[in-house]
Length: 247
Image 1: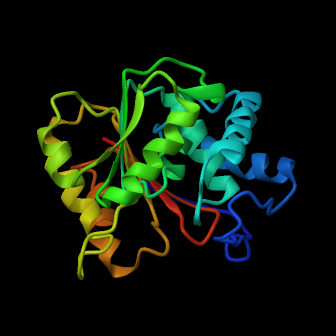
Image 2: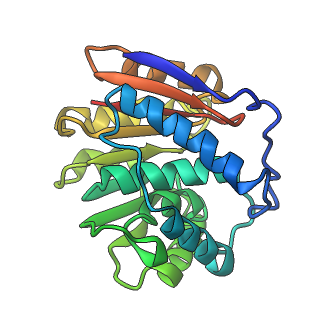
Image 3: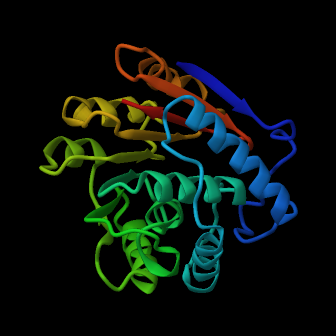
């Protein structure tokens, strides 16, 4: 199944990149839009449920607001909530996030298992960032929330890392940029490096499904092919978008 969830105001729902904690709409509106998207993901048999702990999500958000150094971000409050909710519902033992910059997108995923937003126990939550300085800042940020070390950020090339990872990947989040003309085309390279070892019903999340341009096209074609993924939905409620797929 291939589908699209599209909020009626997605073009106007714009993030202020340098103001990461700015409220863009009333909280009840944010919750309603995200829960409508979760319902469609459940209908597509990507998620087993739609219920997550809203209070824990807000506790996670407050901790990030207080403790994280975020120079800029394109992650809107809706996207932050969606990423947290998907992880809270799926509860991946092993999660990989590729391209985490300062760690904000990583903790949106990992925050369902560590810190004040934790609602389950994970085994390994790994953020990958090829830029060494960015990886160091991301790791410092994560350590302020997670004292356990379950969530950690590593300076590494995502293609090489996932190809050699011995553990299964239950959830793979993609937000990396390749060098030169590769751009978001690296999404497919990362996925292909680990695809054969992904377990059935592993979840794939690809940011920039809307504004990734032609570079992301081959990845979208791959996950929307029923030979590769049983279901894929493009969640469009901000100008970036998120392709949510299940193997």
